[in-house]
Amino acid sequence: MTLVVTVAIVLSGCSAAPTRPPAVAAVSSANAELYARLDADVRQYNDAQNQLEAGDPAAVDARSQALADLRIAATACAARSGCDSARFIVAYDRLLRVEAGESDTGATDADDATTENGEPSPVLQAVPEAQRSVALLRNHQLSELIASNGPIKAALEEWLTQMRPQLINTYINYQYLRYQMEPAYRKAGLPEALLFGIMAKESGGRVHAVSRSGAAGPLQFMPATGRRFGLGVVDGFDQRFDPRLEAVANAAYINEQLKAFNDNLELTIAAYNGGEGFVSRLAAAHAADASFWNPKIYFTLSPETREYVPMVLAAAWLFLHPERYNLHFPRVDGAPGHVDLLAPTSLAELTVCLGQAGGMTDGWFRTLRNLNPRLDPQTEQPVGTRIAVPDVLEKPYARSCVSGGPWMKLASDLHDAVLPTPPAAFAAARREPKPRRYTVRRGDTLFGIAHRFGCDNLHELASANRLRAPHYELRPGMELRMPMCRRG
Image (cartoon, rainbow, N blue to C red; front, side, top):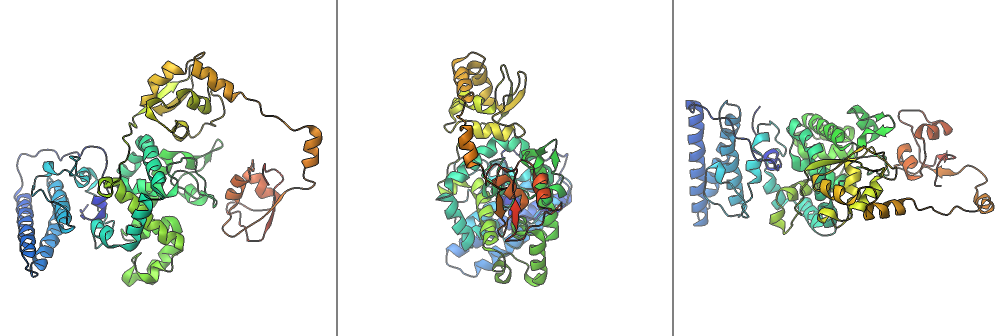
């Protein structure tokens, strides 16, 4: 597959160290020619840059020509066996940083590519996934887009101000879920930063998130779309709440839409939010300039989608380059572990018992729920049940949460609290004389209504209102009978 040095590479930063290509006995003449071409392009660019800084405006063309030739050489390298694409990726990234006004070390060897704080270059980290033939921002580099695009800059500001807590919480939640979710993106050849960007905008890394429209899970699949990508209800469990399975489904969806939109990332993200049918028809109607930023497309999309795409891109960019924005993500040891319960315990009790072990100031409830999505947090699990936990919690559990320990005793006492029940006469006086009803509003789905009002069984609710699967079609103004729902 060919290599396109665009946002697919820039967004593909991942935590694992890059895997270098295996050594070969000798460099082929064809690859040696490409390496020489790389060196010549870098020299041409640097000479042009020096001339430009000396006041020669004509050097702009020479600099652009060097970049263009480097792109062509990089594409040729990726298609050839034994050619080290890392050399081209790192050189290209460095030249783009120079063009953006950032410092340049002048080095050309891939092993020397580091950020100013000594961390490996995100582009160098991208090397294992850079063989993928997806130009995720066709015709321009993400660094250029970030610098010049108003909606994305506004999105960056929003993440760094009022949305900063959600961004930080997403990062923490993701680090504990990463071992379940990142492999699906890596296998699909997609950049991890895109996974983070979607999660940040959709759920903040809350595995059990459910929207008013019925989208569910950390990546917020609608029921029908989830079923299309293998996410059903098995033994009463909605698989959209399984982070590993939803990441697999999300990666398949993104790849499907990238193919449909000719590798255009912005339209693919727009389709994820606004519906692939609508976005596809819109792109087809403006095939000559099928760009998300084309005003005829941009302003036809809903305000929600116009805001959604820049927010996802901005979150992905911040995931890769926090240091450029005075943003510091906390260090998180997300190594997976487990405990086998030594006493009957619920996730709620386990949370109380563990307290703030490992320096988790907000406690472990969200993490334990995320890692054990099939368990009701209030239901005690029997002795021997294996609970997924971060590795850092294995020792605190053995130390503090054994049967009879003071914190476990406290947790059990709190969990066994009995709430008062109203007297029978009072309950009778409050009883509604007829089944509760709900008037459907625009944008409602039956799943969302059932979740919002505590309906125990979606199919019973549908049957009570003569709604047929699988769409359960609703109309604004329709009045639903809700006799089996807990809240009205």
